[in-house]
Image (tube, rainbow, N blue to C red; front, top):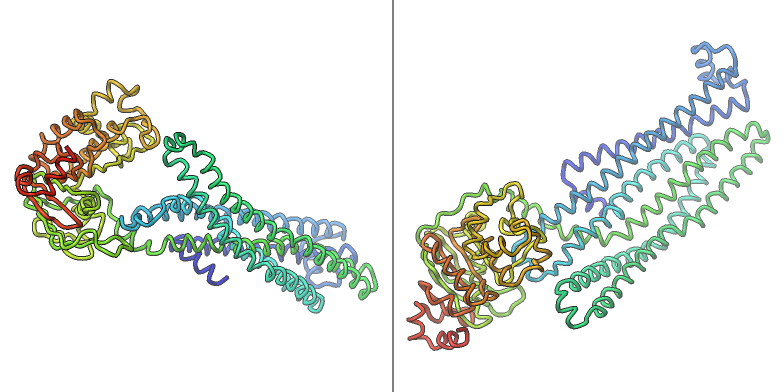
Length: 601
């Protein structure tokens, strides 16, 4: 349990830990009020059964005379209302603290899920190469809820109820040490025995529940990843069955865990209430006089009324915590190193000044291999890109073209070599400044389920979008006329999830407009015109060439037309540059380029 609490505390910020201390202080106060309420029952019942105690008991006699009572009945009414007031205050405080516990716990759902999302987004690009994105959604949306509902909240309930049980037991020991110790040992051993019997089973099915949850998220995401192909191949039942298998396991394990948490209460209630009955019989037998036994019987009856729910809740909370340990470990692992990531990404993008780029970008002896790969995909590669020039990379699939582009974009960190801009080496500290210069157009454009305008101004809040820039870049990308003439609401038309209502060429041109929206100095096009027809492709590149004097173009070529007018073309093969020159020079001197040109005309 100590390790669990330590991991939970590590998930909280210092401010949240300070709030937790306040919440626990409230739990301590309410536990004390519960005992005060319980303690007030004994003198009241004693007076009810024996009015002479008012004069015999020093405290009661002092209250009677100090407050000026003249009749015993009125004093007894006063004591009754006093006990009632104490109970009202105790229960009101319990309600307020319960609200505070619930709010604190579920607000951690907000803060941890937000922190998880930020941590994932700030991870290096390499991190995503070996990850299934369904894991991110599962942890952020599902496992965080499991963590709060099955770990943080039960942990706090466990401590709260344990305090109530402890304080009541201490009070009972003060009243009758032998009887209270018998009750404590009997109930404690009963609950501890049941917990020890089920704890391993709970941990095992908890791990199975997390694994099944991961798989059902994965299969659900895959089912909707390409609905067109799913419909065409009639693969609906395949994905339903794939999902159902893991969904069944998930539901079964959750149900089993819940049953294990709740079923023992019925056996334990028999132990507890049977014990209470034995206490009553014991008091009747030992006290002799029923009038003398009645106050203690009432005390233990009220103690049992308070104690039983606290014991049940303590056991159930402990079982929940044990069941959801796997969720805690999953979240804890996902947030590992989050502090370093947050420090790296602390400064907002708009406050980062772009790195000057007036001369050339240079890659020198760059080597890179993907995680787990035996051979580098780029090896000892050197090249230079002059400012305000157009450069193309060509080569067969797997030659390293996109990898080189990703290194230039700062998405991949080479294991050897350096990248410099105007003689200044690019490193982790100034990489954000270099990236402020970049615009990127990938082969597959991702569009949000939002308006055209918000997809062009991708990361801009709606109220901050510069529509003049949106219109300007849309015209450059040759998409403005289509948006105005063909879409029902123009730039306010919602494009659907992943731009499903647009053709591939239309999505591509919106992606080009997006890359130009922030007026980048360098534009990287990674086979960005592969989805365009020849007429649209020509129009797009004609528009880009109009501004190429002020920008640097780096093009991963898919078609021959995209490299004809480039200042320099680099031919890559197995991660190395085997030739460079203009289009005409390479046609004359490079056999590999001539073959590529014939197949990509």
